[in-house]
Every structure is written in structure tokens, then in C-alpha cells.
Amino acid sequence: MVANLAKQILTAVISLIAACIAARAADIQSSKDKLCAFKLEGAITSGDYDRLANLITQSRLDPLDERTNSLCLKSSGGSYSEGLKISELIYSRGLSTVVTDGSECLSACAIMFMAGVLPNREIPYRKLSAGGVLGFHAPYLSLTNGKYSKEQVEEASQAMRVGILALMRLSSKHTRLSGSDFLKKSFIAQVLAKGPQEAFFVKTIGEAARWDIEIYDAAQQFPKPSNIDGVKNLCLNFHYANMDEPVPPTRTLSLKVESYASKFHRNDFRILVRDSRTNDTVCEVYPRTMKDDSEVHFFACSYDYWSSKSFGDCREFKTASLFGKFVPDFIVLDAVG
Image (tube, rainbow, N blue to C red):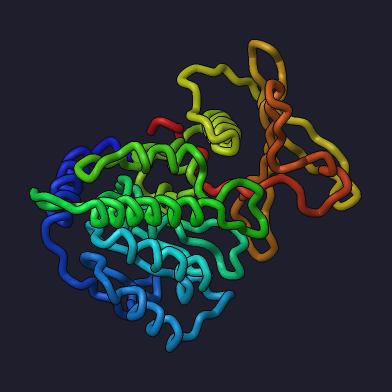
């Protein structure tokens, strides 16, 4: 996804280390950006939760206007405990989160980003530009050299435990229309594996799909694949994201277009994506146009024969008006791109 971001990521790592040394209060205010009504820029410090909460309370959130419920983030991090409090606020108020082109969101900011959700907490909604940088690491304690009492060591240990517990509680949040974890187990493992001067970055389409992050400007940033390659990419990204597994480097797929008559339409069709080796159906893909929208959108379902797990149930495709799981447009791109 971000093959040209090596320099940006190096800069982000330097910024991440610098944020551990010095922090200034974040700039929190209303925004005129077309993507978000609120913005938070700068280091996250104590008191930022109250300032953002007051700003949101004084604003009009319209569930039918995506922009009024969106928060743009640009920060190298700061207080992890304050960031976790703000994450709870973002989730409870039903705000989506955005990292725009050229912006970086690291450490505590990245955890706040992952709290993004649709109004009424229907599904996770986190929007990242292909030109943005998103980097994570575990909560940590910054101590100076010296001798510490038993009580001080216990207090530090308790603070670390509280930070990890808050992260786990965020991961177990529920959304109405998504059956998977709010934060996937693989994501939590990646976060906790990184120390204060380490980070992992979301760098591929497969990673973004796996962790429910939408690459909102993919169509503008990447060449469009062929129709056949796009459907194969869609199936692999959809299936393995729901399995919470990386997309395997090699898997040969074939396509079959199947027409059918339902109680709603006489000439519907679906695309069956099959494993060429076993001939098992991996995914069913349903192209659809919406009312007052001529653009084609995709819904999909998949089934894993080894674990008997299914996603986006399509069993009622001939009788139900809505079936399958909506697939964001960026998922048609190559998983490792």
C-alpha cells in the first residue's frame, strides 16, 4: 500500500522518539476540512480529554452528515493514559477518525484513531490516507536513573497494568453490525510487542483490511486493477481479514459468473471465487448498484472449510433484499501493495 513511505516512516520514528522527550498541549478545535468537523494536532497531554469533550458537546452532530461526526488526527503521541481516555470518548460519542494525506498519527494518537466508529456504534470506521503514516507501540513507563522504593515500583507496575487493561477493554467494545472484535487479537499482539522506541506501521492493503481501516483515497493514489484481478484481490482481502490472518503469498483462484432469478430481480448474477487446486468456493461476490447511485458496490461472503467459519452469510441470496457483507472499494487492490 505505501511503498513510497519509507522516508515518511523514518521521520515518524524520529518524531515518536522526540515525543517521548518533550510534549506540548495539542491544538484541539473545530475544523473546516472537508473530511472532518474536529481536529486534534500536536502532543497529547493531560486535559486534552476535557477540551475535546467540551468541544464535541458544544457542536451539532448529525448522524446523516458523516463530516460532523469525524475527527482528524495529527500527532506524534504523548500521554498514553490521556489517549486511552480520549479513545473512550471517541467511541462513546460515535466519532469516526481520519488521518489525512501527509499527516502522521503515532503511539497514543494511533490508539485514538482505532477507536473510530460510525454514529450509534454500528461498525468501526477509521479512515487513513494512502499518504498518511499510522504507527503503534505498547504503553510504557519513562523513568530516570535512580533508586526507587518498593511502593514506587509497585505504583509503576500498577500504572502499566492499568494501561494494558484499558487497551484490552477498548478491544472488547461491541458494534451493532460487526461480529468481529472491535480491535483484532492480532492487532493487540502487534501493539504489545513494541517497546517505547519501536513501532509497527500499517503499510499494506491487507493489513488495513485486516484491522478494519479504510484507505479512503485508494482510487486516487493507486492504479485500478483489471476486473478479474480486482475480484480475486477482493476475495482474498475480505476472507483473510475476517479470519484475522495475513493473506498468503500464493493462492491460485478462478472465477465463475453465475446468473440467477430472485424474487426481486430476474437477471441477478454473482461471482463465485474458487480455489483452483481444490475447486472449493472461497468467496461469493455480489455486485450491486444503490438507489440514486449508479456506481457499482460489492457485497461478499466467504467460508473457511478448515475451521467451518463463515462471513457475510449469503444463504438467502435468492430471497433476501440484503445479504452479504459490504466491501470497501480499496479492498480490490493487491493485499501486499
